[in-house]
Image (cartoon, rainbow, N blue to C red):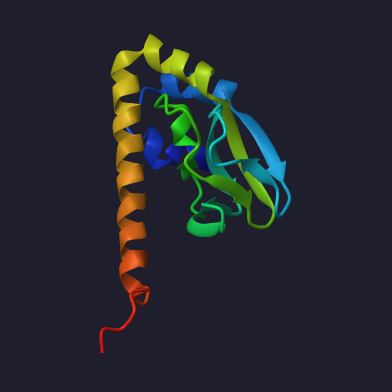
Length: 149
């Protein structure tokens, strides 16, 4: 499965990855289905298998990022004990993903601190790359400030 080759699992013990895959639930969703809402208690972590998921924030519902790469993760708020999801996740077309309960994943991570640390380093790297892409998108948008002429 392509997920095992995802950056998140690179360098992790095969037994550790197998434990995570054993608790992952494969799901298919239709266009427009909401996976979670901004501000809701975070309960699940996701890995994209196929399709796209838009992350939107605020009352206006502005799209801030689109998950589109196989193996890309989202729902990370559930793993870092953040009190709420930071965005709303909406399927953009037919989407297949793996959903993992955060309490179960946290237990697996705590049982194997060495691999858990590597997992969180990979997750931090993925989030850092996403942040850089968002910075690039913001920098390429026309300025919203009024002209000073």
